[in-house]
Image (cartoon, rainbow, N blue to C red):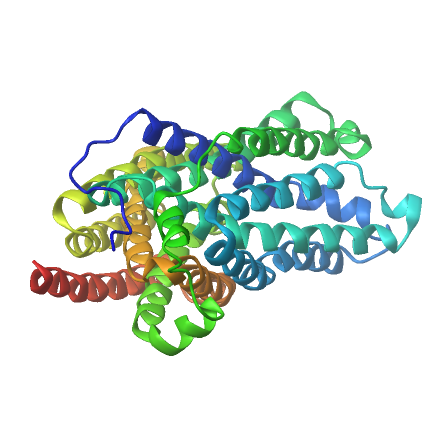
Length: 428
């Protein structure tokens, strides 16, 4: 039974439409998920008592933000379960709807001064729904685009989708910059903080409408037609028969999360606190790095299709380790190199664009969504949560702490790349 598009055919107009709409929806959904963190300080002031100590307010605000990450595994497992049984497209559309509506409602929520304790509780509930949505969106999007394109273009498809997700982070950063420049601090607290949430919700609902034009994947359609869908709970099959694939996927997700969390999300703050850079300059450099990251993801996907995932991961890990080390070790003595070195580092982070190709092909089609979603979301919840704490611990001893962590994870990426390279040679 054939469960993939013909490997020999080129990408056609329908493929490019699927890739563009999927990447656009992914960017808007990731914007909705990440915008909270850019306005955490304002949200903390509005949704908790005014007399609460600042450290406790920030702790509870970021606790609500973290709840989204903790909800990812459960949401991913549930959405993936039905994605393997009812269809990829339905869950692909539902996930963005589950993200757009809570984002819109966040922009309409009454504050603590208006409804008291209900304000942070409602915010927490909406954040949990957002986390469940993103848990299904990322693996679901990879599976969706991978099953639409020819087998020899899976890397390009997944790299393009990953590039779209990273653009969502950039959109959040640019929106935060724009809002803070257009409005005074008083206006920000009064009403302006709501605008990025309202816009995100509206654009998310637009993305839901656009995804109606997407077709079910040929792979799932063939499985359904030939009655070859999972005969039992898909996750049960994954846990029993595909443990090596789970381990492989979780290790690569650890590498992916370390690159994104440390070098993209945490580095602007580290640059300010450990090296004394101005916030505006770090934001500018971070935006440039994300643009380079988005380009790097597509390039890594293309190279993985051409030369194999193992080889790209090996070379990419070496490049990322070198770039991260040079970047961090130069900031104390050569601050004038911030922009070019951060841009190079962002491009090197793009090596993660080769990882989804491995994750998608690690599981058979009948349980692919469940296997990928379980492995990816569980690993991201564990390692994505532990990474900031590990880096913070290392920073106590050295300003190069983030570089030490990234280099260590690049060693893991190199080892996995070697393993994949051997497997690819044996299969050839």
